[in-house]
Image 1 (cartoon, helix red, strand yellow):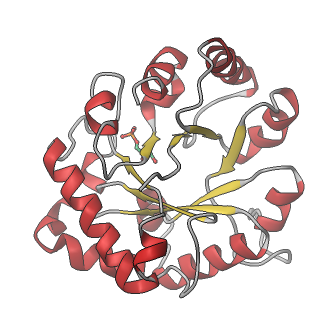
Image 2 (cartoon, rainbow, N blue to C red; image 1 turned 90 degrees about the horizontal axis):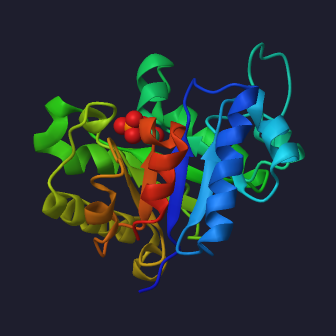
Length: 245
Ligand code: 13P
């Protein structure tokens, strides 16, 4: 089954106006190498999105969060409608850092996913177990999958499996484990939305992906791309990652 591959940069709370240089160098590299093996999506902080979209429109952009309502008295929040209006195409929902530090519940996440889809944004939905949950990994992942709507397609939802213990730590599951976990995630998705659609859903791996381990991870048949944190802030490293399919 041929699925769309994605290389996604999650800049988290990093970057400044000057970081457009990094994006321009990605685009230059992509053009030079006639690169088309994966779709590249950059998710900078909200403050940079609008500027980047204007300054370098030859790439896709995503936000790192959205509110579940379109507008209203919600100080500090940004809605999916607002993101859509500036030309943003994707939004990350359910990142473990937001589940943890912003106490986002599965109900909150369901509402955010609905808001994104209602506004025609594509959702990058993150799931993953904490270190102490490794033994009950699949029940944790299944619970997180429940936040997805009852109907969706590979055109509007991308899954990112990010084991919490692998984020920013330099640790990853073994290569064999990554493939097996992705296959099991696909089986869990199949129970929810059926085999045909689940076979088409792109499931990305995230958590300490870098230019040294990316070829091994991205060559796995169940891995449809990478969600990259730290290594996406350095243009050389990120270019090497999207070169390694
Ligand atoms: P690192 O690549 O820095 O481990 O971060 C992964 C991540 O959280 C991407 O969303």
